[in-house]
Length: 315
Image (cartoon, rainbow, N blue to C red; front, side, top):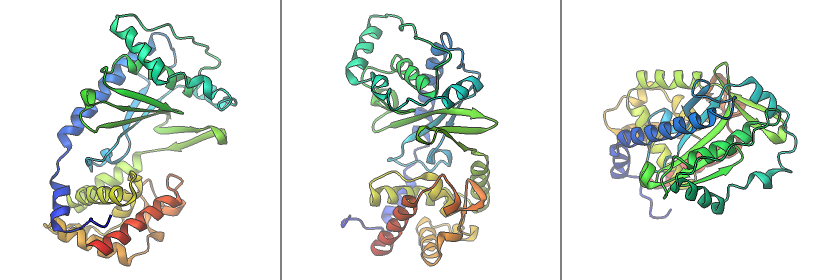
């Protein structure tokens, strides 16, 4: 931290690092792997097919503010009333957790061995009455393994899959796929301990991003990239992309007009230093303040303020 110098050279280097072609390569590979995996599962599971699945980029890749530290985060939304009903009935998840954690490294190596010998995937033990979002995540895990290179690693936590592999995606690429339900343009995240769903609609966020990029110009995305990098450096964790987008969405368009990226950065930082974000609107729903949006938590604000304090000290 003490070696960090936030000067013109650093700010300009962040913006010059163009990751668009890299993102396209990763995105195409993710789409291909999931398409093949879903086609395989659809032969044995009636709740899923390529027709009722939506793959949606979720974090900073949605705005194009991709950096070297970005996780390629996706929502995999499945439209199925029966799958949703089965998931709502889940009440023994934690008791059965150890059973579902059969996807350990040793088992994965065993599956890889089957792949090498061209052995077909084992038939899925399908129980229509008990099959839920976690069952689907488990089966998707196994299907994806068969579409990865031998050097790639995949892990699972609840209904999220994490993949790394330089041969599949490139050096340092990290993939996160969150399996959820999808209905009426809403992604539904199942929160087991609350025995219910949290719904999220991307439309407002997408519209706000497109509107801001059109009105404020390319420096809006440039500032997102800069803030993403500085946030990660200061907090040693990935930012909640929607929170930083909301912060910069509330900055007046005229402050993004300067041709100099560094001068724009200084103007935006000075504006945010003088303003309280308590009245800032959420990019997810502009009728809500940041603190009213359930997609954010107190830690988002704490980490943001820490970043702004470091910027003030180092610039």
